[in-house]
Image (cartoon, rainbow, N blue to C red; front, side, top):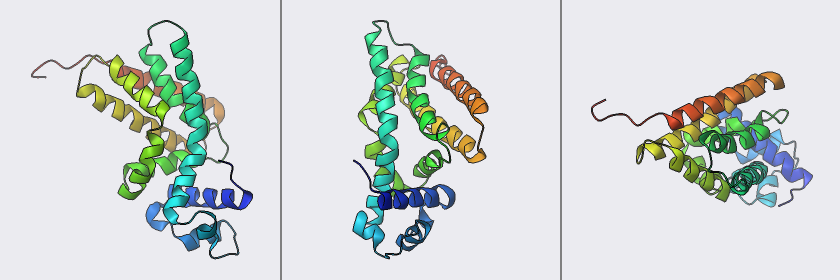
Amino acid sequence: MTYSTPQLALIEAAERIVAERGIAALTVKDVQVAARQSNRSAVRYHFGSRNDLLEAVLDLRMRPVDNKRQEMLDRIGRSGDPPQARQAVEALVHPLAAETLGRADSRYARFLVQTLFDPVLAEIAQKHLRAESFRMVHKLLIGLCPAGEPAASWRADNIAQLNMITLATQEGRGTRRPESAAVVEDLITSCTALLTAPAPKAGD
């Protein structure tokens, strides 16, 4: 979907408010003021409701993430070699890092972290966070984990959350690109280690 300039202003205002102050601070009036829209019904006119506006934030930001992740998964599939744990983690981490640390003035990672704590936003986010490429990489992570179920699912979920939280922390600091690259590589290494750690022995 292509958004108009007024729509983009409202989307970016909503993203900024949620990222910096939480969803409880998000009101239609605050978004209208932050977006410098004179029309007090701008959100309702362009999106219908506050929740529809939140869905638009996720739609705008997740599409490039989803596309890049799918490209990485396709390359893994075309290689003909069995997928490796680090490749799967890279397919999870790199697309979101590119859309957050790789984009000037991004607040999207901090916006996403709010989904971990707010049930309303979490429900809205589910259909976007569970896009096909995310489901594929999540399934791949589980399959590559030696711990077996249910620990493999726990680890895949923890890795996805660690990815969001780490990127949100760095995004908020305005990390310079060379340092950001080092942070992302260390995140991938840490997540790979978490995924591939041996299953605990009974009684441990």
